[in-house]
Image 1: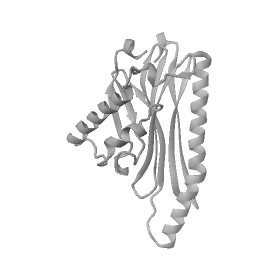
Image 2 (image 1 turned 45 degrees about the vertical axis):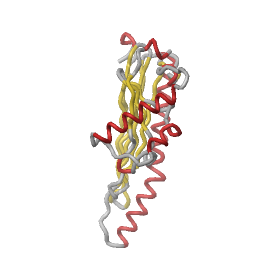
Image 3 (image 1 turned 180 degrees about the vertical axis):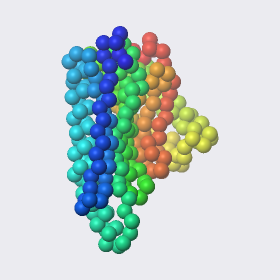
Image 4 (image 1 turned 120 degrees about the vertical axis):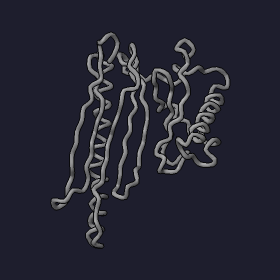
Length: 222
């Protein structure tokens, strides 16, 4: 996937289980992108994503593993069953056209009680330059653009709620403007998505609510 076949995204994967005294404590699954064939810019992106995967690996092998071991010890002391913790970094390509690469990434941790802590974000890149595509390059920046965008997202959220697609906090419309993730948007061929952080617009069980607007014609966004 890429400009005339000159670059493509390859996904690297790593799975590992961590134990304590032979008992499973934590299992993680890493999946991160590498961009091949796009010159220096692609190498820069690949290096950045490898470093990102390394940070998640270190977090799970150290901090989170220690916390899981403490819970295991507590369960043993109280003769209660222990459920191994699960962690993952996942991703997908959302768009690959000409010199533009869009990715959506998710990381989550399930800490034995069935509840998930998760984050979701998008990255959009100019591959050859290894530089981000800013939101202003995708959506028109006319006067009052942010107010209009928030209005569109509010309408879309209301439609989702009416359809039973999600449950948002009572005061969520008033929080959109201040929480709008303009640097973490996801670009698709037909839409622009905005993943909001867990527990900001909705209860934790809803994860990371995603609201979106139609993608304008490319000639309008420049």
